[in-house]
Structures are given as C-alpha cells and as structure tokens.
Amino acid sequence: MAFTLPPLPYGYDSLEPTIDAQTMTLHHTKHHQAYVDKLNEGVGEEGLDGQSLEQILANISGRSKKVRNNGGGHWNHSFFWETMAPGGVQPSGRIAEAIDAKFGSLDAFKTKFNEAGVGQFGSGWVWLIVGSDGELAITSTPAQDNPLMDDAPVKGTPILGNDVWEHAYYLKYNNRRPEYLAAWWNVVNWEIVGQRYAAAAG
Image 1 (cartoon, rainbow, N blue to C red):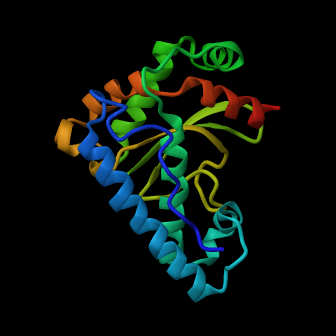
Image 2 (image 1 turned 180 degrees about the vertical axis):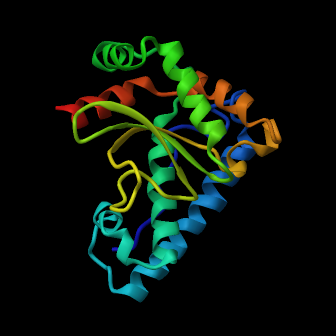
C-alpha cells in the first residue's frame, strides 16, 4: 500500500489569524504532498513495501537520503497537523502536571521550547518528547529528522512538535521566527498532546 496524504482535520483557514490560509494550503497540498510522492518512490526503489512508516524510521540509518528526508517529512507533517486545532486551550490533567514538575510552569516550558526553536539553525523541528525514562524533554532536529529515528541524538516519543522550516511561517511572519513560535501556542491542540503523553508515559 502506497503512503497517502492525510486530510487536514480542519479547514485551511481554521487556524487564522495565527497561521494564514495560504500558508496552510501550500504547506499541505504542495510541500507535504511532495514528501509523500518522493517517499513512495524511495520505498519502491529500496524494496520497503509493506513496512509501516514507524518501522522505516526506526531503521533509517540504513536508508537513502531520499527515504530519510521524505519519510521524516511525511511523518512529521502528519503529526504536526494533528498537533494543532482552532481556538487552542490550556493543558490540563497529567500533561499539565508533568510540565509543571519538569519545567516549573507552563510559561517556563514555552520559553524553553521557543528558545530551542529559535536556536535550531536553518530548517528543522522542535519537539517535546517522552524519553525512555518516562521524563519529558525538549529537543530539536535538523531538516526532516525526528526523535523516532534510530540515529537521533536524543531519542524518544514525540508528543508535541513545531515546524521551523521557513515554508511553515514565511508568508505571514517573514523572517520573524520568534514571533511565529510565540503565536503558535494559540493553536496547540493540548487535548491530543495529553493523549499522546498518557500513551507514551503509561
């Protein structure tokens, strides 16, 4: 079965004014679609048919740049779309308690997360993960890498991630990455982040 572009769980204009409709449309229908198309080519070339995307990423160190970049791009973006929702709410329950315990407060966590996003040189991603020890950690990755990859410097299960490639924000924020990172919290889907945390932390 070939990989396919997942539909957005909301309209292209649903995250306005934080993320504009034109950016969402281009990001989903052009950038993400291109990752899917090139991943399918790479899967065929390397005889990976039948493997899940997670299986491919778990052994990515032995794969081509084509499969790495586009497999990561497909996984990261599918995860990213679900991380957002119109009219974001505040975290509650176990995830809120875990953030307070690890970082001191939600605001302190956001500051550290945003700093990691600003500090990621060039294109990449910033993540909140659950490590093998069950602890929360903030990390960043270049290009379309992610913490699920077997050769990631910091491995873990992502529960929240933000795209800091310029195509994610440039039409609205131009080169003002810190402004984009600060505004992005308005559309974070904390309900699904909490579900991911419960699943990863046990």
